[in-house]
Length: 211
Image 1: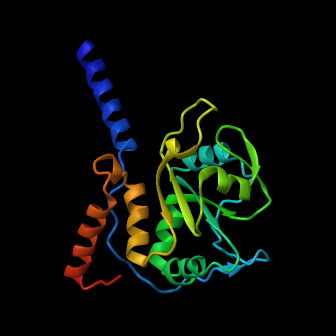
Image 2: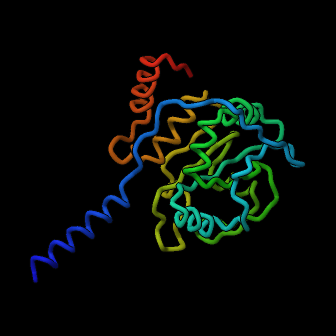
């Protein structure tokens, strides 16, 4: 009887470990077509159809992302930002990149100078602009990637909850690789993103895929 219980416990532990293990790395590239066309809103910014629509309570948004088995991120943009335009019209326009982000991430889009009220992870309520100041966000676009787990205490907020930030404009390969690096939790074994990116670029070179 004890042997059967031990085997059952081992099977449960194994299944749990499999369920919690990071997803396998996706291919270094994929189909670009059909292109994804983002629409420009009345606020002057481009918007993706999969962007999170919510009451802007970040703890609640994080919980929903977690329940949906997605990683959570916040992106700051602004009207007239050339790098934001490039991100939407050149990078996220590529089908395989857009699909990967949509399938694996829940992203809240904020305006660097916006007035909408946002509830930070510690319960502090501020405007989008004040939240950007609170987090030290200076440039657009800035994508803030959050850890897979957020402390239960309400006092937690800020960089202690973050994995990494992506600021300004990057080419498709760098952009895609950073999302993969976060989603696959490569940072848990190697905090140096550049090593991961260089290895992926070398793989692209072997297959003739360019950035």
